[in-house]
Image 1 (tube, rainbow, N blue to C red):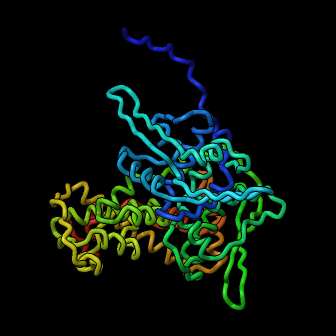
Image 2: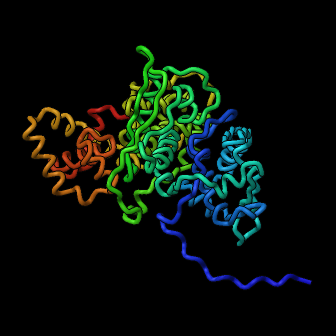
Length: 460
């Protein structure tokens, strides 16, 4: 006898950004993995799974969710479930330690971060579902914690680096504590917590501060509206042995005021393009997290164009070429470098075959030249602005703010107000505007072709 389908229930209203928060056990915030490695995306996925587990309740033996909903709540976009599976495997392979102590009991538990996970493709027209479990020893402490911190998925999802995501949760934890001071630990402990790595045995603090801590603090300052974080260093003699952080409250901005366009989505497709060039998955994710997304996308497009060019020498290592192009700013716009200026990385000795050459259409060729021309104008505008006297610079900045500031996306406007032309985020917008008001005329095809011939642009 066929089973009768239950009548559909009335759809529930999706929670607002303020409501979509996870009560994260304090022990699960500053996780120091003992085996394996955690990444930014795995942390986002873990928070999203925990959020839905808490909504479904601690008594559920297994938790279930539409895969599309998990993808949305974890703030990434891709149809590539293999990359998602890789992050789930990372969490299953990561060993963490939980320690609690009380008047009469001290308890130590070593456990996986996540138990069994299943992804079920139910056939055409039906949603793909993901189910998961937690290890029984820590399940209740995760799903129904006694001491916890409210973590907003919306804010956590805006962080671009693992270290910033960790510091955001630490900041949220200590924001309401009396002294607003985090735990004080040694440098190696913090290095493992802020990078999600279990293999760190010794640390050069100078590099940890420069490459991890300072960048994470800047990210918190730019993206978190509730608080900023200050680094406190503790020395023994002349050497910094221990550090901690102070949380400094800010005037709060309502999350509902943040438009969808501003929300930071982890673009798995972009990471996939990096992997396709021969970059390892972990390195690709790190590169994505520490690079401006627009610049990374432009550089990937530039490498794709370079690989397709029928007139340029074959690239032996597309991955090495991409890293060198990022470092040297070859792709401020999507264009090919002039002939004869290939970076040394282009001749690196690997046997990665180049894709078959695809000739460019006349319209694509002219578009490439136009992008080069616009990039050249922006460079001239930057140089011209640098040569101005401070009063003239101030007038130009005031004019830009009067004409364009209200039209900018909120993160670019905030970056401009904070750093002005020195901002990596806002500078290109400003210098493009300077170029437009300095040379307002549109270039004719003749002007563009003359420019290309003068610069020796290849592929025309």
